[in-house]
Image: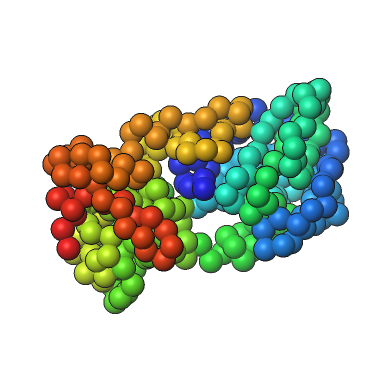
Length: 278
Ligand SMILES: [Zn+2]
């Protein structure tokens, strides 16, 4: 599932090609997406038609497509979540639409922005104010731009849940999923079942681990396990740079011990028993 580095990769590949483009038509499949909710196409059309995409940004795992001119005031736009298999592609309108295309914005100069999502766990939410969208309002700080060691320490304080569960909770820290949590904990040398409150004294190492894992992912344009591609359709190359995720039984790149996999809350956790002691 796309996490912060994959979403950032989509934003970076999309922004220079989409910003300033005018929307001339909107189409939707009408099928339900995340939480069995269909896209509110009337609202999307009302916001988008005959206006321009002003900016493409990211917050946590959400892609924000801002609309209109700054002088319009407000922060109208669309929030897009890729869910498990979502793709946001900018393609010439003459190219056939992929199966499972659910929303299409026809742009000036013969291109289309297309939201494709075979498993339909993604979402496209129109908003008269992006800041007021509940899914965005309840997000925790972005670890690359809004989190420092003190703030992370304060958030860890008193939390009995394991550090892995803490980091996966988007309300505590935004943007991390299973891959980058495993990678961050390994870099910080913290065992994944450590109670979050006990990692408080290592907040600096943890923040450095989180940032290191995310920055590696962004530098390699995302991790493609199966589905992920950027807005040009290109896969990411971070898989070969992962330190523990997906490497069960392989030697740790730091100490040579065998990487282990355990299952927590029905999800795989990869860690090195040599580097990450309980
Ligand atoms: Zn190790």
